[in-house]
Length: 143
Image (cartoon, rainbow, N blue to C red; front, side, top):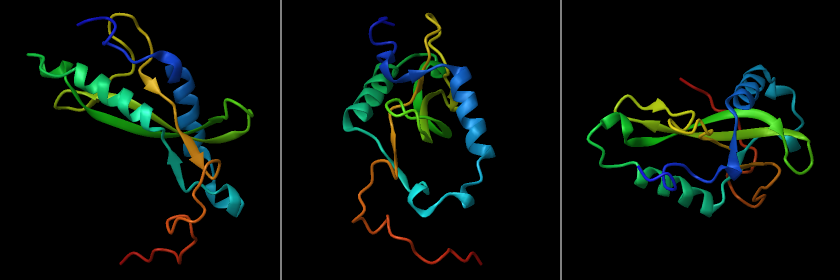
């Protein structure tokens, strides 16, 4: 494959070790103790970042080896510092999945560059407070 289309620009990638720290922090976080204004409600993902992911996926199609075709992207939740303020916040990281088994592709096979993308901003940091999805509703009562 052409090296330039084989990997997205690394401006939004993080190393595996950082992703592991973030996902572990998320799993250990007691979100029930967060104040109302800090409760995770969603994530803002810039349109251009979706286009980058789609471009990567489209450049990895049509291979005779099905393990080299992008089957989708998996999102992982994590906790980590805001790149501007340093304040700890929720993170949503994406990795491409490959082949019919949908296995995570953590790094570029020939360069070793990270393929773990972190370009989201959590809500409450960036919210639409007028959205009906933002409002607090009665708890879900499963049957």
